[in-house]
Image: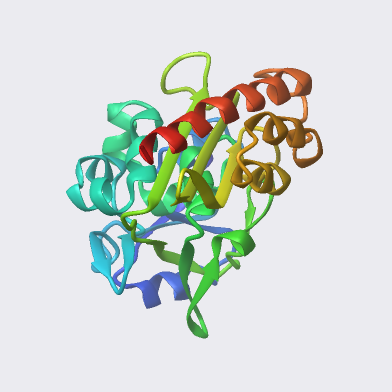
Length: 280
């Protein structure tokens, strides 16, 4: 299929992009790995596409004030190859090979994945597990929104109609940081039937500050807070049991809810082993 007719504008700056977003039915174009598919299937029919790929200052990876900052236009492949990500944001490094295929990672952007907020995508869950934040530019200036407050529902975020996501920031790993990641997908590169991104702090032989962020099991990435508390106490099976109250996966084309909940438990056991093993 072919997309419906649309106008095209190339933004010169973030401010220019914000101004252009005031036009009726305007959409931003970054990597386009989700947008182009919805355009071609006519699931999206914007009147104006605003290309932000030429805007300077929106890409790059840097360590700043104890946080890893990733520009919105940074390609997945760049993050996958980054020594800064590998050392200071190991959870993201673990997730990157699961995102699509090399051709997708070469064009897809970090900011695009976060802004699109597909509930089965890896990066939104990683941002939530890391307790990161999103930098947003709007007509009234810049603001930072915590990951716990950024995801609102199915493909719904704290981004306003005239906002531009400019960067994400996550706490840099320290010596006691632990990270774990696993997912089930029908084929490598497919969206996950269920997945889990997790972080914790080593605490003697146990764990503290556990954050478990599931994806593919709800309308958005989901913190399993009761399971987090159980895992921090050292009881993995109690953590798995606690998922009954933490998660209520809907049926979808990938699997029914009961299967997803079962997979969530399997993932928790695997990821808990990763977190424990890293501390030995």
